[in-house]
Image 1 (cartoon, helix red, strand yellow):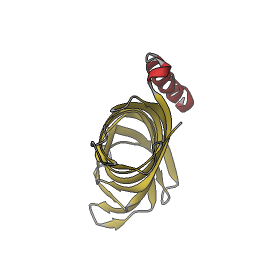
Image 2 (cartoon, rainbow, N blue to C red; image 1 turned 180 degrees about the horizontal axis):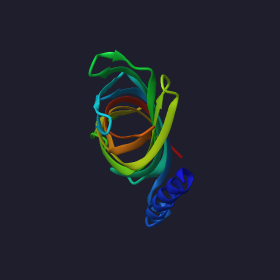
Image 3 (cartoon, rainbow, N blue to C red; image 1 turned 45 degrees about the vertical axis):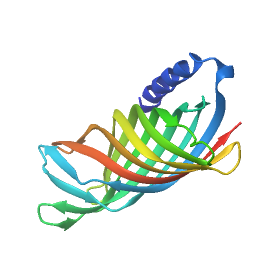
Length: 202
């Protein structure tokens, strides 16, 4: 089911890319790594409470077309955050929340004249597989939901084809739904991510 859903999103992304003349855009690949600061989640449904997280890590790989001041890409991303505490009670929680995402992103990415500095504004939409794993109850389940991101940052061109980026990204999804025993649980998900990246044009 997950593979089928993500394959559909990937096909849509490829169709969007193919609507642009290939010669008009320069192909590129990009890699980012950074920190994921996942906001506390409110648990809704038959089990309620608040779940907080440790700081986590985020990674992504993207491939797309660069049209000068605008670029468009397909991106696969992953982030993971361990549980910190569960309220009520302030109890230590054992487990983690991980997110595998596939997004179609657009960027405004125009170099400042007579400099190597490139302001960046981004937005994207797609799908995410959210996996909740509780080690205490030996529970693991995932849900596929819509996802989006918006971001901003700066790039520095270190050569005509290589740019180093520093980005802030706000990432969020629809509420993810899980069934733990007889409990129906919904969790809201949003994250503030700080990323460093490398973009290489071919």
